[in-house]
Length: 127
Image (cartoon, rainbow, N blue to C red; front, side):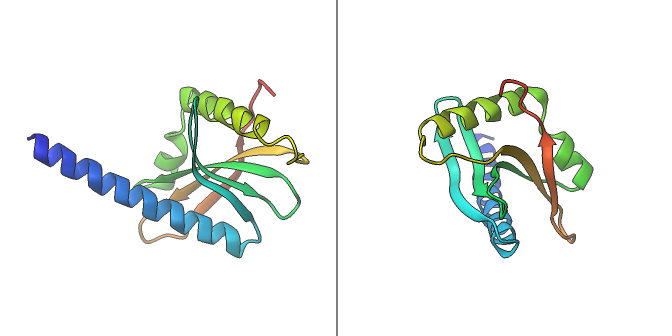
């Protein structure tokens, strides 16, 4: 049983990495500049950090699910708070970056469908 659980974990990890690579490629085609992938801070991990064409710094959560609504709904309040804290730590470690604004996005990947990029998916009330 443990081996099956470990195999599922490895498969999920691979699927997550592929999804993040695909999402990063999509963003680059749209003119975004990828600043970080799987960014780790003491508050947690951020899937992607990118600068939008207008200069906004975007912290992006990538979700692969069987339905777009399930992907978008899977980013709960606790996870949003953790991502917001991680984003603040990341920004604080780069004082020269000077973003015009900060945005939190979700990219939902659903098999057989085009990715759904939800811009400004939530606001960080702590900023």
